[in-house]
Length: 116
Image (cartoon, rainbow, N blue to C red):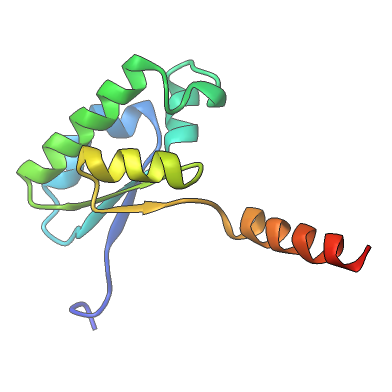
């Protein structure tokens, strides 16, 4: 079963960034998934700065570089297709471009407009 289960660790706190090397040394770990909103808050930034604050962008690059050194796949949560493309170009292996609730709300809004 372990060959078919993907082991992913969330990186969303200052502590996880400070310990990223030790986290990535875990041979059972397949991927890290960066939660940029919580991560930016733990570094003292408001969530609206998550993708523009230079310090945060440097942290994402640092985490990405170390993960690649260990041969681990990397993912990051994004706010939409623009930030998704940006982080794929940066070198992340996977991006999520929304949450299930946000996507559901968009579809419901479109359908409700059709009913009017």
